[in-house]
Length: 255
Image 1 (cartoon, rainbow, N blue to C red):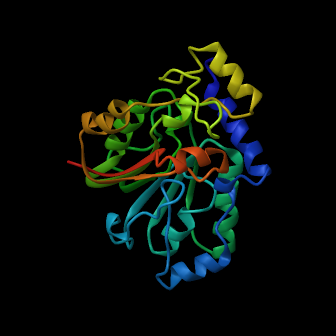
Image 2: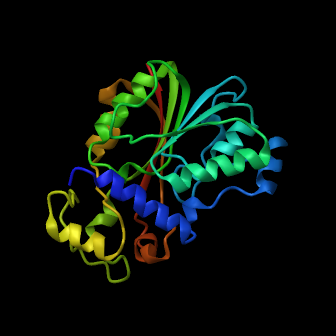
């Protein structure tokens, strides 16, 4: 399937229309709190990113990579960053425009497919904020290389990643029963594709530690901090009850 990212963009547009958690724009109250210096953002479902992971926002050129939806970028812009958001979902990008108009700040809104070369010159940004989203693309190593290219020396990449564990199960209720082999790649497994299509889940992929963490290192990044997080979806309650994290977050610096 050559256009699987187009299908994913269309799927996410439908999810947003249905009230998807990660497509609900930030409230005016939260924006007002950010202007007072009170803010928190997430790379993964539950944990807030430590404020120590961020540079001072004033004067920082920040790229929200696959970070549309009007959730994090408004706070960063109101804290003083010069923000660009790249996403492939029209609905997620429209939310960015809506919040920017409501709150009165400028943001560069770019529709682009992150499986392609990013539409920015080398060394364009000081910080990339990349919440969980590379589970919707097959080749994550390309993304790490492009992040490295568009960051300035000393630039920071903050990334949230699905660790792949949940793809072992069709149903994460108890008892947990392994039903899939990893890697989960529906482009190579018709049964996995059929399951995703039945659930309107888009085209999703599991990725290994080698791809996610090793891939950042191979691109040239130095990982300076990391944490694990759990799934917030009620359907994953058995994973949470068993103490099994489903996500990673990393802070990496361009050497």
